[in-house]
Image 1 (tube, one colour):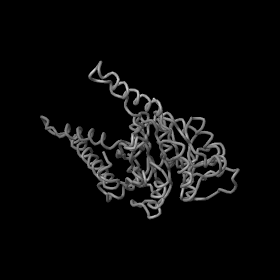
Image 2 (cartoon, rainbow, N blue to C red; image 1 turned 135 degrees about the horizontal axis):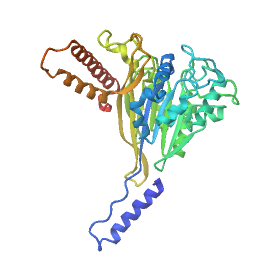
Image 3 (spheres, one colour; image 1 turned 60 degrees about the vertical axis):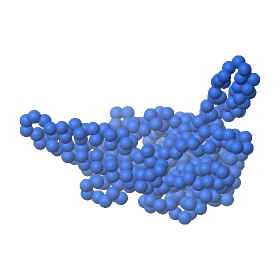
Image 4 (cartoon, one colour; image 1 turned 90 degrees about the vertical axis):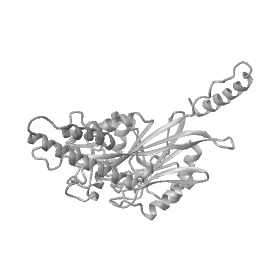
Length: 405
């Protein structure tokens, strides 16, 4: 049901409730207001071991984040930061710090439930202008919406508006950081920089054309768990211009989230969603390293729910109704002898519950001598449970306890 239809239906229901009061003591309730659920994750990094893990997995890339597929598919919109070109034809094989993804990645992301991807980041030009163009062609072929880059400057700066649940959602993408800035001509491939005044103007235009405005920004300092003053200043100005949700990425670790309020409207700012999938901090073990040694393997899935509401003055507007982050953890078998590379993203709460049950089962006394294998399995499970608990607490501490499930 569209926004206008909902308003009309609600008004009709209210009118009928009055006119038919003599016939019935109870009028049917008005239809529920439109609600839109958006899920967002951070950096999708194509390190060599991530690609090797996908090759070894029976189902390819979706197997690396299979736990998250129901979450993505169940959302109205699912967002991630695609921190790699997908240019196997026009680019070179990926090397450290210059990424390139295989041709199968876009279809894997689409099959997993992703709908919107940021392509404005410091790796956008890793395969040159031709790589930007090929990446966009491949994403478009899979009906994935790219924000922040384009075959030319006008298309990079074009407002992307999607309609879900009868609500119009506008997406904008910017990067504050370039490894190499190849923006040369307006008629050539372009990656949109974070120039604050034009960004504010773009948000104001989006506000006039959509019910909900989402801005993706690649910004901040790598491996720093607190946003910089510049990040906070930009966020404040974007919200003042009319942004409802800021999705930040680049630091490769999580940063806090906060609610900013202006003009009676609340906006959510996620300063950094951390890595979604990567090979970073691969050597981390909770029993050998301080807790900070695993920060780049922490992630979070933001779940934001927006709904159409009526203001006291009678105006209808879309407002943030719910916001929470689900802790994620990247499992990595780096260093396992003679093992194929296995990297996968898991939902921490579900894994913690499962492992806790396994520990309890292994802890039940048995008749006869305790086997060495059983003792070893128990110790392994206990150590893994400790890791999950440490990571969940670290994520909650970083993002803010109020936001974490």
